[in-house]
Amino acid sequence: MIELRSDTFTLPTDSMRAAITQAVLGDDVYGEDPTVRRLEELAASICGKENSCLMPSGTMANLVALLVHCPRGFKALVGNESDIYIYEAGGASVCGSIMYEPIPTQPDGSLLISDLAAAMPEERDDPQYALPALLCLENTHNRCGGVVLDPTYLRRAAAFAHEQQMNIHLDGARIFHAATALRVGVAELVHEMDSLQFCLSKGLAAPIGSMLVGSRSFIEQARRMRKMLGGGMRQAGIIAAAGLVALEQMTDRLEEDHRHARLFAERLAEWPEIAITLKNVQTNIVLFKVIHERFTSKTVIEAAHQRGLNLSELGHGNIRAVFHYGITEKNVEQALEIISGLLHTTNQG
Image (cartoon, rainbow, N blue to C red):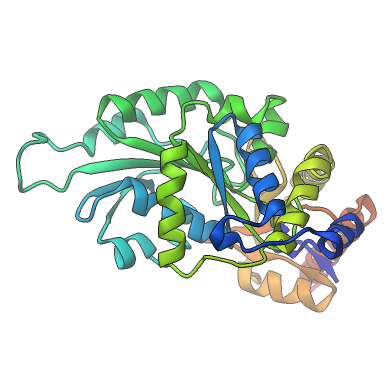
């Protein structure tokens, strides 16, 4: 089976498996797991921030960030196509009495400054308004097809947030893909962010875990929230060991995934039955539609699965293919052959 549903399906490398068995361990809730401490120091250094905290998942990392940044009854401005708003079970509202205010997401993944300004209350001192305390951005942007927010936009958005007395949090689940596409360091992309999270368990191929990064005081508060949510882990070095390998060995190979995605997308674009926006194929995600009266996204996905290809649905009729560690150029060709076979069968029928 060719697995293109998500880069969460990556399996740990041999180096990760070896590191897990050899990890030096301690109790991380007490702050005494040396392997976790090494990972947290490395993550903070790469991002140019003071500190970081290992989290079980990106969802928990984002939720903790919202709980730290937003007092109860305040608002978080989020993209209406963002993972935080759509895929994370409304956690900030459930756990923190925080209101989400969805802002229209542009095709390039950005939120217009004018739209953000329109969401600000007329009078901050008027008690009837729920005040926004946080702006959340996403880079790369999943539901926009892995598009990248560039440093110039991020600086403008951060400047607006800080002028409005808001913090800014970046859901950077795939921030290393963004840095690879732009050929800049991660620290340059997140310099103005007050906090960010990135996943070890997506394109970096670690089996579990995400990092929440920010100032020393922010991370101190984040550790308490992590404990409250049940995310305190004991001998977590077995997770951190794979995360260290991910950061030390797996970031430089992301260009391969981007090349595979581009090859796949360019070939799809040659077929009249496929609708695809090539300019949005910037990293490892490809979104496309099959335009044929006999197919829906669901039936395409089901038929592809029967032929040995796993794809996923991502709303608005889009089909998603995500390229990652373990997918070879031969797999890309095989996936294209499967889709071509589906279209040929349809045309003959």
